[in-house]
Image 1 (cartoon, helix red, strand yellow):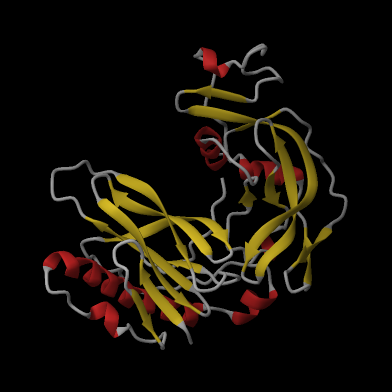
Image 2 (tube, one colour):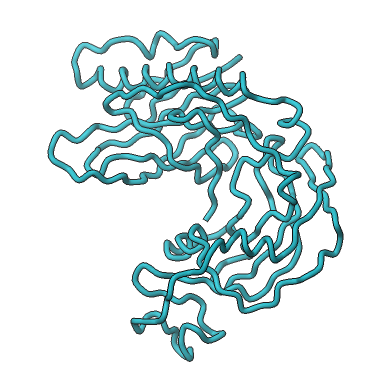
Amino acid sequence: MHRRLALWGLTATLLTAACADAPGSAASSQAPDAAASAPREVAAAFERRAVEVAAAWRAAARPDAWRRGLVPLQSLTVAPAGELSDEARQAIRAGWFRLDATLPSDLPSATGQVRFPDGATLRVPLTGAVDAYRAIRPGEPPDCAPTSPRSQPTGSAGADSPDAAVTDVPGCTVLTVTDVRLGTAPLRTSRGEATVPAWLFTVRGLPGPLARVAVAPDAVGTPPSPAPGEPPHVRGLVYAQELTEVAGARVGYRLGIGACDGDPAPLVYEADDLVVVGGSVTPSTGVCTEQLVLHPVAVTLTAPLGARPVLNAQTGQLLPLVTG
């Protein structure tokens, strides 16, 4: 089984080995000075952890459900493609919506069809628009009465009028849903990117519909829950917080780093059946606030990611793709 471990941005060395069951000796080699050896020590610790995570995942995997059912590898709420403002992203993640449309009360059909990239299909029960809206809006949004001129677009009667795209006041953005219809959306699954039934919410100000998968919960499988043990606590080793991009062989994610850490760079362990990600930093040596900062990084794998899961080196769990 082929696998690769790479330390991106810290060294030009590509660490490789022919077997996925043991760390490569290149990662454990020592450099002549402390500055050079620190990244190698971090890389070696990451590789050992990645091997543990991979073994735990394989032991917990259920091949039947993974290859025959519908197991999402991303959030069931799919943001539209295109550029989104930070305020819109925050609102989508927080579920800050208001409704300026009528939710359909009936389903056109009790079942729908999931289509996988190999041509296989799966009949699934559907869930209604009301449940889908509750899923994207789990609670009441904050009180976002306009408090500044920029919250009222030119020609608008105010942020609560039908012409207001987004009510935008400091720390508060609520998006307005203007239409809802049943359609389909792409969803990354354990069987590749599938086309699934989805409720499509037209949201004023967004470049396209916001989708919520319309498959009933009892037809949606869950990924394995491995228990690889405690992660290593190695100075300079940091972990991924969320997966943000999958585009062929390119994988983007955000590292959780300290506010004063420097030189953040991704670490990746690649095998035929999975990918494990983490990262490295140059730790701060001075006084700094205790604050977690999400820093975006990206890697290019040796082959397109496909249906391979991306695993969190810290927890061993699936790192779901988060859109928006």
